[in-house]
Amino acid sequence: MFKILKKYAAVYLFTAPVMVNAAHYCVGKVQTVDVAGNGNLQADIEGIGFGNILCSLSEKKGEYETEACRASFSLLLAANMANKPVRLYFNNDGNTSCNKGNWLDFSAPIHGFYYIRLEG
Image (tube, rainbow, N blue to C red; front, top):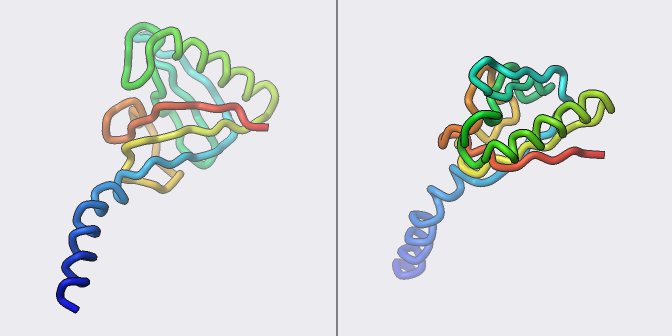
C-alpha cells in the first residue's frame, strides 16, 4: 500500500506545476482595437478584458515578432468589422479564467499569450 501511495505522490509532485500553468484559450468578440504611441497593439475583447496589450508593432514582445503583430492587427480589425469572435491562446497563465482583467500585458511571461485565431 505504501509503495502505491509513494508512486502516486511522485506523479502528483511532478505534474502539479504543469496543471497550474496549463495551456488554455479564451474566446470573445473584439469591441475595440487600439495602437498606442509606443506601438503596442491593445484590444477590448468581450469576456476577456479591456485595454490589454497583445503585442507590439514596433518591437518583438513575448512570442510575437513585429510582422506577426501586424497580421494580428489585421485579424482583429477583420473580426471587429465582421462581428466574429477571436480565440486567444495562453501557454503559461496561472489564471485560467477567461476574465483576465484590464490593462494587462498578455505578452508578459506570466500570461504567455502566443496565438490568435479568427473564429467562425
